[in-house]
Image (cartoon, rainbow, N blue to C red; front, side, top):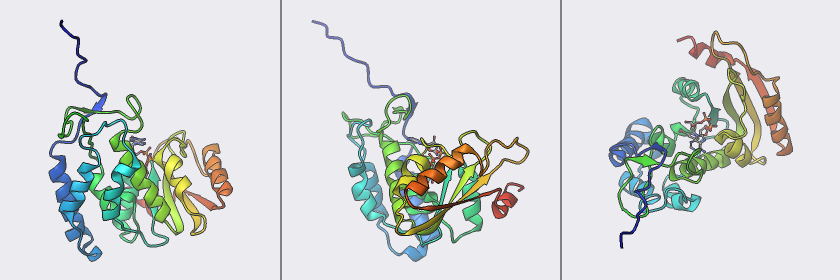
Amino acid sequence: ILMWRPPLKQWKGEGTTAHLYEILLGRCYTYTQIVRPELGHKDCQKIVKAFTKAFLSKDPCSSTEQDYQPLMELTDEPVPCNKTLFWSKSSELAHDYTRVRQDMFTLEDTLLGYMADGLKWCGDPGSSEMNYHSCPDWREDCSNNSFSVFWNTVSKRFAEDACGVVHVVLNGSIRNTFDERSTFGRVEVFNLHPEKVNRLQAWVMHDIGSVHSDSCSSSSINNLKQILKRRSITFSCQNNYRPIRLLQCV
Ligand code: 2NF
């Protein structure tokens, strides 16, 4: 009897970044040896093995925080109080700012964020290889995919570790300046610890020449303010914070 076989699983998202393993390893050495040598020794071979072990040979749609726990334990790197910078829909500007303000840290200025930024990855339950052809798209295939779960997990820890005055760069040139479905709105805001976070300082930035769409007085920012109030965290907001504004001109 001829049996029908389902075709190989084809996801809607792009596949694993070519040479992922080597890129992760290279970035780990670059970060620990050149970017922040003061952190001391980190075993990059072990870190990258733990990274790939978290998702290889597994269903890329049933990834869990636990899968990434061994990796998290190898890469503990708390940021000093008052130096955490979150961002949402403002990746470039936030990173331009921490390039100038070397004492401030976005997630991508810490080891794991630095290693993974801009890359894609997933495995397959029937193989020990990475899937270079396609990976689940978080909107169209599944939200618990290995890639999204990684970012949720590291973003959660980044927020849990934050203390003092914490900062966020928000994009005032879009309608949902504060987006409750973003990682910042879903994960980071809810994992700040009120007993050690004194205040969240938001900087709402407008693209030069754009029609202002949202500012500190908009309803989406007010929503953020209310959420923080319920969590007993003080909120302050400033439109077009000057030091960041100047970076938009270069
Ligand atoms: O790629 C990163 N470096 C990254 C990804 C996700 C989250 C960084 N983060 C951390 C950073 F530390 C920021 O503080 O969360 C904050 C930014 O995330 P956001 O979701 O608030 O900001 P967006 O500009 O909306 O998204 C950033 C990138 O992540 C993707 C999105 O398409 C964009 O490329 N993204 C957002 N949510 C998901 C998700 N659930 C997602 N990709 C997959 N699954």
